[in-house]
Image (cartoon, rainbow, N blue to C red; front, side):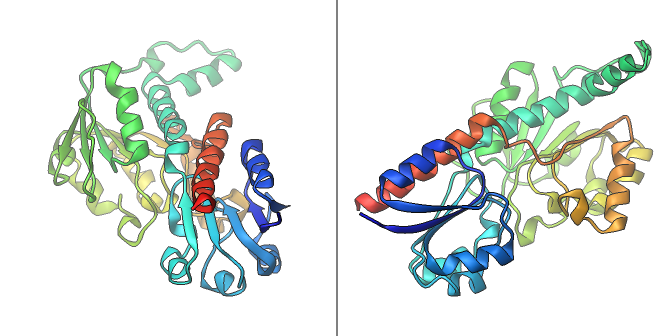
Length: 314
């Protein structure tokens, strides 16, 4: 049985490859693909597995007359024109729960490192410095954490925080079911603006989340706070960050994402801004690795395989 070709336009775990082969698919593996190369491959494909490397837009969909489904490794369907795909009868799958814990753990790691000065003090020891007073940390117990976006990753972050004795406030524009017991859900941002000393974003890329954290949002924060963003780079207007750090409105900054990635794709001004921030001892920037664990790769791959298997069982 030959069900057709599948373009693997992202790194995937062997469990997905083996499962697709067992179901009769032929695999075209291009984990480092670009848009142009993908356009050359899709005319013969019935399926595409992607992450963030290519845009499955209307042009690509029109170029793939046999396309039956698209699978997204991870969360965030902005890389797929879902509405147009579905209008063409193309099934769209994604696996946000697959890397939720990985992203939450990374956010937790950024927060602990910033509050305890772990990364900075460890780098100083390598240089022969033993600075205790300058690296005196702060505890999370008793602090108020504001979580913006209470989907899979927001809930996972709240779960990790449950043992730290924090007060957790969460806000989401969507109706949220199964709110964790340790979370107070807010129907507006007012309490978060008033009370939060840590602010963590867990929202998708969308028109209404573009520069969600901007000068206006910053002005409404009523106390110094730590800002974390492990969602999408476009969520935070990075141009306001240097002054916010200088004024100590922001006392710590942990970013795993940037508006243009990777560094070689950034305009010079954006690259200069990022490097300027990265040199600040109150800042930690990592290269979009939060959801990139070995375990997450397996879980995302397995979830997509399960969804595809159901499609073909039907």
